[in-house]
Amino acid sequence: MTVEMQRTELSGEDDVFGLAKGFYTAKALLAMWRLGLFDRAVRDGELDTAAIAAEWNVDDELVRPLFNYLVVRGFLELTDTGTFRLTSRGHAAWPYRGYLSTMVGAYEPVFSRLEELVTGKITYGQDLTRSHEEMVRGLTVLEDRMMGTVARAVLDAGARKVLDVGCGSARMLSRMCELAPGLRAVGVDRDPSSCAVARETAQLHGLADRLTIVQGDAFDVATLPADVLAGVDTVTVMFLLHEVLRQRGRDGTVRLLGEIARLVGADGRLVMVEVAGTTDHRYREQQLFVPEYELLHEYTNQRLASQAEWEAMVGEAGMAVVDVLPVDMCQSFCMVAAPTAGR
Image 1 (cartoon, rainbow, N blue to C red):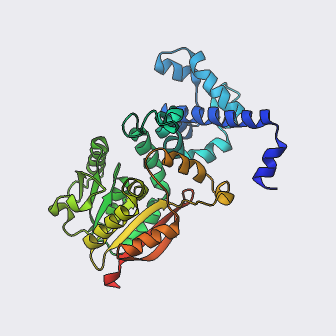
Image 2 (cartoon, rainbow, N blue to C red):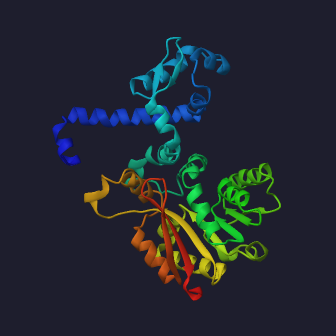
């Protein structure tokens, strides 16, 4: 039975209430994570609303309704002693909690004013933006699901110095440096708060002498300080090129890829992670969050491309795809490319 047939068997009321339930459940889970309770439930095993209320100096009746709702939705269960714990469904959802931030929390400012965006009364980037803090927070957690793939691609290529474009927290770079003691790394991000967190990450892992963080425009690699770029033979860029594609168009994206190809040299590598888009509506419903991902990107000055489109742009930039690796995130892929002059 197709999804469309299943929908027609629902009454309009059932369908609308199902949509509303999804909204409230997502918001409740997001609140649990923002408050540190989702992680705490995994760490401690049980959650005591009275104890939590006392910590926050609020009435227990302010805390308990959130927990009770998630019991109804199957993510929490009430124990015999009156505490709450995650169900198997809750535990299964926890590794993917970053999507709550990247897909819901980060775009709350946008979708709360969607009608004004659609009618042109406001403009994204001028009148409002997504929450950068929520985006970084969610991606930091989700990085764990692709850290092994990207690190392996970089280290297998024999990288000596890596430049991560849009480094965020720099956890990925830190992991690579820990795995390869001789590796040096540079992280670039335009957001000062992200750079501050990245520097803390380097200090925490004792990597300040090998991991340099630079605040700069990740879209203009060629304008970064020459001493920072010196020796870079590998560039990693994760979930950023689709922003370049929308804001600078296909030609601008190819130019950036060409800059990267010239930077890494004949024996270098580009390791990019993206989400594959599609224009075929017949298959979108089967692609998990792709329709939602495409919708939010259309209204936030970004555009997804198919894997074939990325391969074509990489080729026009003077590189050839040498490998495509699966990534444990919906519809994502890791593409490894090398300058054709070195082939």
